[in-house]
Image (cartoon, one colour):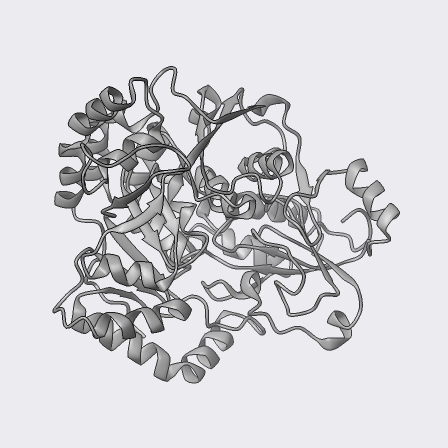
Length: 480
């Protein structure tokens, strides 16, 4: 099923329109609040329907915003589009997209699973495609990729604001965008031209210093933040990352961190614009947007002396690899002796039944490159993965690129199975043998959520979340 070419990217005119009012609105915000601004405040004030009049008090004021985009995944888009159709409008008020990524069951591998999904969900896909075509909505058919990775590759831009009908919409914060997960009713409001109304958030600052080293990765940053704030610590707040260390992390690494802010209850997360974002925009054929962002770069970062409701400091140079779980995203263990002791104390199975790399959290080219590097080294020693290894590319663009560059072959050489470019096991769309799920078993993944029954519908499956670096190993026994 082909994807629509309508709305295949964020128009440069839209971006220029956002930036044209940014300088004036940032100055207005500083004057009204009488202090330097966080990046969060700059973006939000710039998207108020009335920047001069609406209240700006954190945790108290309810404000009307005008987001730049709407994105919907196929499970939630069905009802949203049915509601939109009743509005009698010829097209959406803002650019909108539909992404078919939630209805593909992972079982046998990409080719077979895709065929089954297209046949099983034919009526749903055709409804979404035809409605999208009628109203000028961008349509990404099954197999084109996971909504958040596709948004990062094609639609997100620094200083923008979007809403999406999926909790991990904040992934776009990796490109400096305020991106909030909402329900279908909010999406319909914005698509029909009504404002998005939400309470003004607190802002929690995470100051990053140093630079990641060794086996440490961007995933470890958010695992550490989850450990500190717990699953409720971000509620009602935007998590804003700043500091010299933030500028050392790639755009897709930033997206990984922002994606998982949902696991601590955050409204969304965001990084300031830097050269990594500029490079990513250029690499994904959006050099015009990078050039436009460069011209207003000072307003796409927090002011010196910006006020945060709470500040956490993390020295990236001292950050060690973490693995979190099971059954809660804030239960952190140091990889090695730390998790080995916890496993022994809690009688968690040491034999890993499956290792999974992908989801919207860790399925970028950078992520798969890291995993392929380990696989290549293992293959050079004549080793094969003894644990089932499942790979989910984040988009068709990534899958085609890793195939072109030989990374797919590196992974398949040690026995990996490549799944469809979809959510799959991350959201419970994973069919496993009952002789595995009927007993307590351990899996290691690079996914975001790990509560009971999340992956395969079985509360017996204990999921531990890690970076896609050495989860699958080449042995079947040892520390999870």
